[in-house]
Image (cartoon, rainbow, N blue to C red; front, side, top):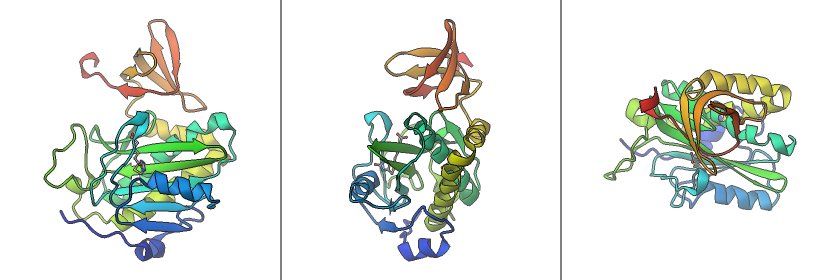
Length: 255
Ligand code: BTN
């Protein structure tokens, strides 16, 4: 598998968005696109400003984890200035997850599901993730999609790579389509948030399954639904628990 260069001009030519990716910075390798986007946001960059890289040296994941970002992947961050009430900002990452899933599915031709809150799954393995970092009036929405497995490196367990399933995949097409689909869901959050949640439910690999939530509290039960602010509702022996953050596992032995 070869690492295709990702070129700003080619993405700009294909881009069909109104705001997302306007303006757009494209880099070969950065520390973390979230770092660059946060700096741009602090300097007053408009909503939609995006930073794309095909490699990161210090990619970050949720819950303080590292996000392995080998060359040839798609790592990008969008500056947002949400006008949604603060308690609804958690919907941004669910909207980004369904947008990224729809874009990646269309370009790669493989089915993508979402795991609460915002993991992208291909055949049950993690192929992408979202990290939204908020500061005052700004949120930076970072999206990472695994494309090419690390050369000669040990592959992470339970990780999937789009180019393994579709070696013809174009990073440029993937970037422009994911930006478009994410923009559509972000706009829809203002117009019809229940429609975004309905789409999340229809792509969900979590609902209806036994889950173990590792976090401040350990919770075991059946994932029943997500509520209007994106919290996961888990039916436990003690009743329904509302989960706002944490790491959801699907224990195989319970299914
Ligand atoms: C997760 O699933 O834990 C979230 C992963 C988010 C990774 C993306 S890659 C682009 C942006 N820059 C980062 O350092 N992280 C996000």
